[in-house]
Image (cartoon, rainbow, N blue to C red; front, side):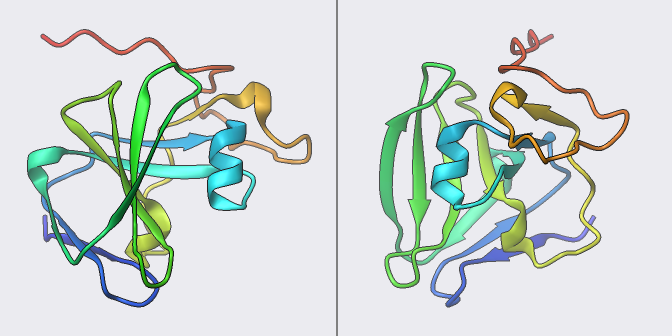
Length: 140
Protein backbone atom coordinates (compact mmCIF):
# COMPACT_ATOMS: atom_id res chain seq x y z
CA UNK A 1 0.00 0.00 0.00
CA UNK A 2 1.24 3.47 -0.87
CA UNK A 3 1.70 5.92 1.97
CA UNK A 4 -1.22 8.19 2.76
CA UNK A 5 -0.62 11.90 3.24
CA UNK A 6 -2.61 14.26 5.43
CA UNK A 7 -2.20 18.01 5.75
CA UNK A 8 -3.65 20.92 7.63
CA UNK A 9 -5.63 23.57 5.75
CA UNK A 10 -2.63 25.82 5.08
CA UNK A 11 -0.11 22.99 4.47
CA UNK A 12 2.29 23.95 7.27
CA UNK A 13 1.79 20.59 9.05
CA UNK A 14 1.81 17.27 7.21
CA UNK A 15 1.65 13.60 8.10
CA UNK A 16 2.81 10.52 6.25
CA UNK A 17 0.94 7.34 7.23
CA UNK A 18 2.44 4.03 6.13
CA UNK A 19 0.49 0.78 6.11
CA UNK A 20 -3.16 0.15 6.82
CA UNK A 21 -5.16 1.81 9.58
CA UNK A 22 -5.85 -0.34 12.63
CA UNK A 23 -9.36 1.14 12.90
CA UNK A 24 -11.54 3.94 11.56
CA UNK A 25 -13.87 5.23 14.25
CA UNK A 26 -16.71 7.75 14.23
CA UNK A 27 -17.20 9.51 17.57
CA UNK A 28 -20.41 11.35 18.47
CA UNK A 29 -19.38 12.52 21.97
CA UNK A 30 -20.07 16.11 22.88
CA UNK A 31 -16.32 16.81 23.24
CA UNK A 32 -15.70 15.80 19.61
CA UNK A 33 -18.73 17.78 18.48
CA UNK A 34 -17.32 20.85 20.23
CA UNK A 35 -13.75 20.22 18.99
CA UNK A 36 -14.76 19.83 15.34
CA UNK A 37 -17.74 22.16 15.23
CA UNK A 38 -19.59 19.28 13.57
CA UNK A 39 -21.95 16.50 14.59
CA UNK A 40 -19.15 13.93 14.93
CA UNK A 41 -15.45 13.24 14.43
CA UNK A 42 -13.90 10.45 12.37
CA UNK A 43 -10.48 9.20 13.47
CA UNK A 44 -8.25 7.00 11.35
CA UNK A 45 -6.08 5.12 13.83
CA UNK A 46 -2.59 3.96 12.91
CA UNK A 47 0.21 2.49 14.98
CA UNK A 48 2.30 5.44 16.12
CA UNK A 49 5.43 4.08 14.45
CA UNK A 50 3.60 4.12 11.08
CA UNK A 51 3.17 7.90 11.13
CA UNK A 52 5.72 10.67 10.67
CA UNK A 53 4.98 14.38 10.95
CA UNK A 54 6.53 17.56 9.63
CA UNK A 55 5.88 21.09 10.81
CA UNK A 56 5.29 22.58 14.23
CA UNK A 57 2.08 21.89 16.15
CA UNK A 58 0.47 23.32 19.24
CA UNK A 59 -1.00 20.87 21.74
CA UNK A 60 -4.20 20.99 23.73
CA UNK A 61 -4.57 18.15 26.24
CA UNK A 62 -7.82 17.33 27.98
CA UNK A 63 -9.58 14.37 29.59
CA UNK A 64 -11.86 12.44 27.25
CA UNK A 65 -15.32 11.01 27.86
CA UNK A 66 -13.67 7.64 28.60
CA UNK A 67 -11.68 9.18 31.47
CA UNK A 68 -8.30 9.09 29.71
CA UNK A 69 -6.49 12.20 28.49
CA UNK A 70 -5.97 12.99 24.82
CA UNK A 71 -3.28 15.31 23.43
CA UNK A 72 -4.68 17.11 20.36
CA UNK A 73 -2.15 18.52 17.89
CA UNK A 74 -3.19 21.43 15.73
CA UNK A 75 -1.58 23.82 13.30
CA UNK A 76 -0.71 27.12 15.01
CA UNK A 77 -1.25 29.00 11.72
CA UNK A 78 -4.61 27.76 10.43
CA UNK A 79 -5.94 25.96 13.54
CA UNK A 80 -6.61 22.60 11.85
CA UNK A 81 -6.72 19.72 14.34
CA UNK A 82 -4.84 17.05 12.41
CA UNK A 83 -4.03 14.32 14.89
CA UNK A 84 -4.26 13.25 18.51
CA UNK A 85 -2.50 10.91 20.89
CA UNK A 86 -4.97 9.05 23.12
CA UNK A 87 -3.71 7.90 26.52
CA UNK A 88 -6.28 5.07 26.30
CA UNK A 89 -4.44 3.70 23.24
CA UNK A 90 -0.76 4.51 23.93
CA UNK A 91 0.56 2.81 20.78
CA UNK A 92 -1.93 4.54 18.44
CA UNK A 93 -2.36 7.91 16.78
CA UNK A 94 -5.68 9.21 15.55
CA UNK A 95 -5.65 11.21 12.32
CA UNK A 96 -8.61 13.30 11.17
CA UNK A 97 -10.12 11.59 8.13
CA UNK A 98 -10.77 14.91 6.40
CA UNK A 99 -7.06 15.75 6.43
CA UNK A 100 -6.44 13.03 3.82
CA UNK A 101 -8.49 14.68 1.03
CA UNK A 102 -9.57 11.18 -0.01
CA UNK A 103 -13.29 10.96 -0.82
CA UNK A 104 -12.93 7.19 -1.31
CA UNK A 105 -11.53 6.53 2.19
CA UNK A 106 -13.11 3.48 3.84
CA UNK A 107 -16.17 4.10 5.95
CA UNK A 108 -15.77 3.92 9.74
CA UNK A 109 -15.59 0.47 11.34
CA UNK A 110 -17.70 1.65 14.28
CA UNK A 111 -19.54 4.56 15.87
CA UNK A 112 -18.88 5.36 19.54
CA UNK A 113 -20.61 7.58 22.10
CA UNK A 114 -23.83 7.32 20.10
CA UNK A 115 -25.84 8.26 23.17
CA UNK A 116 -24.70 11.84 22.40
CA UNK A 117 -25.31 11.79 18.63
CA UNK A 118 -27.46 14.45 17.07
CA UNK A 119 -31.05 13.18 16.80
CA UNK A 120 -31.14 13.76 13.03
CA UNK A 121 -27.92 11.81 12.37
CA UNK A 122 -28.64 8.41 10.81
CA UNK A 123 -25.73 6.01 11.17
CA UNK A 124 -24.86 3.60 8.34
CA UNK A 125 -26.76 0.30 8.38
CA UNK A 126 -24.76 -2.59 9.74
CA UNK A 127 -22.14 -0.42 11.43
CA UNK A 128 -21.37 -1.53 14.99
CA UNK A 129 -22.57 1.23 17.32
CA UNK A 130 -21.73 1.74 20.97
CA UNK A 131 -23.48 4.08 23.38
CA UNK A 132 -20.07 4.71 24.96
CA UNK A 133 -16.61 3.32 24.14
CA UNK A 134 -16.29 -0.42 23.67
CA UNK A 135 -13.80 -2.13 25.93
CA UNK A 136 -10.32 -2.33 24.39
CA UNK A 137 -9.62 -5.72 22.84
CA UNK A 138 -6.86 -7.67 24.63
CA UNK A 139 -3.56 -7.99 22.79
CA UNK A 140 -2.56 -11.49 21.80
